[in-house]
Length: 329
Ligand SMILES: [Zn+2]
Ligand SMILES: [Zn+2]
Image (cartoon, rainbow, N blue to C red; front, side):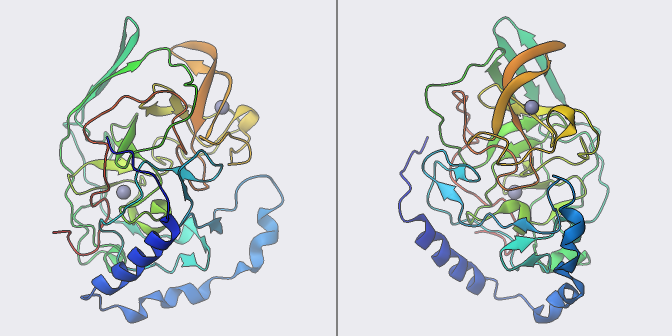
């Protein structure tokens, strides 16, 4: 495991952005951002009537990477990002916000009948095994040239089977100190897909930049299908109750959907620095007062740091090529 310290992160990211901008040399879509002009920010007053997040103007998380736990940030184990990503900012990104409702989605409804995921408790362990394929339809990957999403993110990867064979603590406990998140897998979603942190391979806000399918997933370089954000096909975020369990993080704690008790939409302000809190929830067939994470519409979307000690897995490590753009060499 790499545990390099983060120091000149802001400068590093800025440089990489420049390089990335230059590298998409076969980009031929200068006029593609014209649909953005129809956007009008003047409708915001409606959104502020309740406490729900305004998904039409989510703060862009670019640069919110830290070497210590920090609310609204990803505490990242790596500080060097050199993978591929979306080749061009879509018109849903405007200044320092992005509009979830306007984001392009990868087309298609590809089924994965071989999807496997089993979760069993054995003694002190929660044993999770599966093949990484999702049990719901995905978009068609690699992104097809005919897909409108192609002009922003040419994700060249195909969805492939993976090997998931984990033993997590069935009754996880909080560690003395939170720890950093690796790139790639930080947990598993109950649809069989991996959960990644909020960063794309260039260290940017993956939820905003990377073009995802209808269920907000896509494959990285090794074909691992994953979510950086709320897996919308498991939970669309509606309702007036606490969201259901949506997956497990590598430290054994559960991650639930967008809503807390009474249906209150969770945000960075209502959660701790790692993106969790503790209260009574459905857990292992009963009600338990236990720490758990929540998805949010806001960056970092899933988890900001590990609250418990994470299982070390081979997949976690350096940034690869999670997103599209020109195929990484
Ligand atoms: Zn909760
Ligand atoms: Zn990704």
